[in-house]
Length: 210
Image 1 (tube, rainbow, N blue to C red):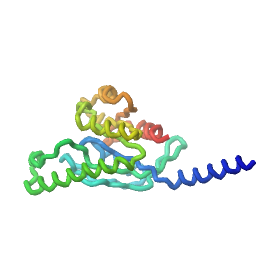
Image 2: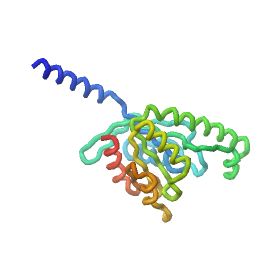
Image 3: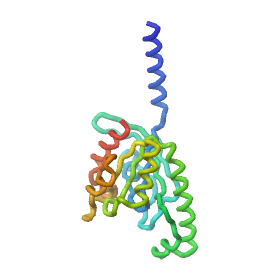
Image 4: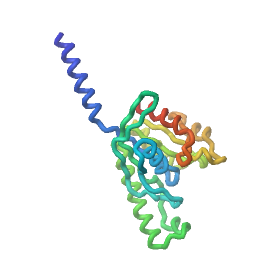
């Protein structure tokens, strides 16, 4: 009787702790893969607002952005989490790359400096993540040094991962190649911009944090 009562009390405290804990879901990936576009899609779908601005210029997101207590529902299931959108991870950031987009040299150097700090910040946030969405551009070679570096860091930390193959609305997108590159993880193909296949994405998200 005493043992049963102790187990009951333990379960109550465990459930209370679980309810108070804020699940942190991070979005990681290389620049221009569509991380903030995906964050905006999730936020618009469930809280009616956006996470941040997007641009064709790399490293538009240069600081970690967060939206708290996003609650999503799917097939009678509910999931509440804090969504963290991170700057694009890059192994090299050169201000001259921004000059190609006709930015003034002063602005290009400023953006490069901020982007470098953003990468460092994003990596620091990794240790606090409960699960991560790795967004990759499905039209590009998934075996890039950046993608492999991100996946390697997540694997070393045993963080649950869902690989999101974005931009499937573009003809040259190749989801099978992404699946071959990361066979240890579930891969879901979407178009964050157009909203293609988002229902399957949410199903995969529930499996990720079950």
